[in-house]
Image (cartoon, rainbow, N blue to C red):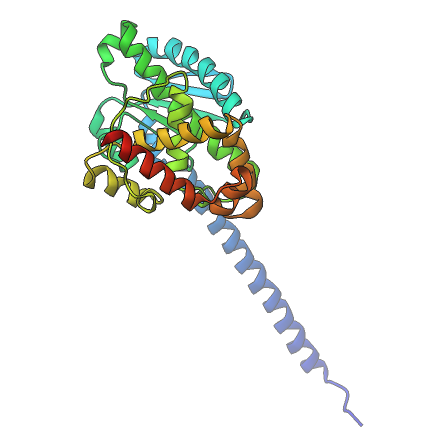
Length: 291
């Protein structure tokens, strides 16, 4: 038969339970305080984009925020005009109209934009991570005076970067990763969207191997290694696809790629042609043109 616990034993057990409760309550309080302090600390830590926009003027238009230096307020009007063109072009090409917030940031100098983007020799970029377009337009003084040629190149630059934004948002809507699309398709669709009014088939360039145009590193290496223009080549790859299958082919390739989870399979489903065959035909065609 089990002996009954003594009164002293009961008090000891009760004290231990109380002490344990106090200990756990105090530990929970310390965790809560640490969590709150961590949250406050993180709130005060500025992201690179936040640091970049400090001291800049801001103008909100529809779903975008425009950041610019005070003496360059003409960029607000230029951006709004370019945005209206960009929306028309991208909705036609991608059959998609995003409304997610987007920051447009004008950089003070070329070194800063290159350092922020991590890319050399650029005048603009789109960052999906930061949800921003960074711009440092050529002929800045002439552009601020709204001279015709600088204005034309500014509009095409803006449309190119905005097309990247729409491309990424459309891919995210499919719930697949943008990296399943080769970089030549990313850049080619952006270039073609910006310049689709042109029919400049007289351009000459050496064809870079397609496998050298897949990743970001491939792209940067190709820009420096080959005596050619990888943006121009990518434009003409899209140009030839549109000539063969119509302008809806861009949307169809994206849709089928999202279904298949692989670009080569999506390409074949949309075009009825193997990607490798298209690559070879393109290479032969442009080698002949440039020969």
